[in-house]
Image 1 (cartoon, helix red, strand yellow):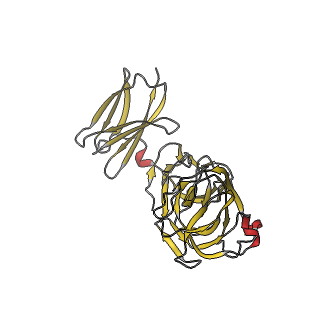
Image 2: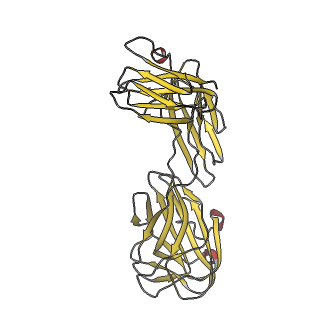
Image 3: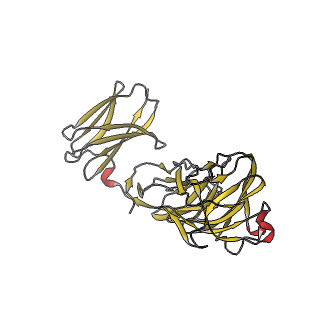
Length: 345
């Protein structure tokens, strides 16, 4: 269950979603030095979408080489000699990496940035091939093709096959079975949310924002825009695609309430109001309020004020505030109070 947020006014819910998550590293350690020009392997995302941004390899021999990286949805098994099944992700020319002749071989970063997203609970095949130059890609042959080789909380690596020549897809074969990719891979886990479950008042509306930077949007209302405006009690879903092969889905429960109990307070037992005198905002209450929040008409948070439970009044200098209408929210232990004021001059 998402946290319930209670609003008296129209506000924008959502995030400006960009791929700015902290990069993580998946490591397949050096076990052996079985040299090949090309290597196939599978990666499987576990419970979250995983975006691959970079590979590092273990290599032998000094000198420059050209390299290409391919990928496909689904396993590589059975598609090693089928170029049409693969998508070229990146090429590197005249790469001259660091090398060693035996483990531990330091991982050499392949230049260039990738943007390959593996959807949660799906497996993708990868193919890294030297197309010119000297040297080799180092793997180990201690496991059988299709075996789970390395695992972390986000990804599984499965043993694949290798090839002996510089020819892309080895000219149709033959291929060397039971080879495991060794090196490091940078990736990100992309969380996604359109906000907490929200309560609004009758007559108010809510802007749901699915975030920017996506290639496509589809709401369960049928809308295909980044934002929608809602004013009815319902569960709203959105599916967004990021252009790198992944979709993200989230939902939000919106409840429309009468809000009669928070429409300003004048009774002695439930007091919460704000007034402006000589550019000073005076807020008074009699409940055990511990936090005050001030927002503008667009829902932007202007001020957050922590107060002691024993306090029943707070005075704030608002001389620098622009002329506009503002909302004040008082948060008590079991209740949220709302009121508003106008800065006129």
